[in-house]
Image (cartoon, rainbow, N blue to C red):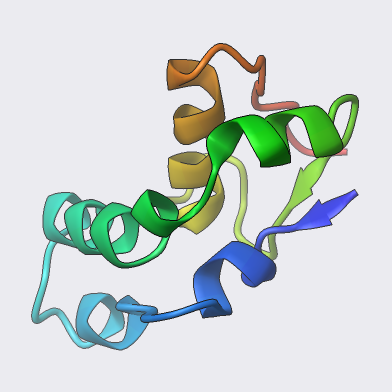
Length: 86
């Protein structure tokens, strides 16, 4: 299991600007990728976390950093799909 809070807390987490309405989803995604994911080796994490689940407190249909991390894995050849409500 991967708690995606790990990915959100490693450097800069732009959630406050998003919650306050100062940045949109697109801006949040851009900042999150630049400030967090660009510093990580996707292949290291992709191999380390094979057959794992990304968890977040947000509903599957709600925008959150879990979706950004999932897309990052998918874009780099590691399958990561939305499961839905369990």
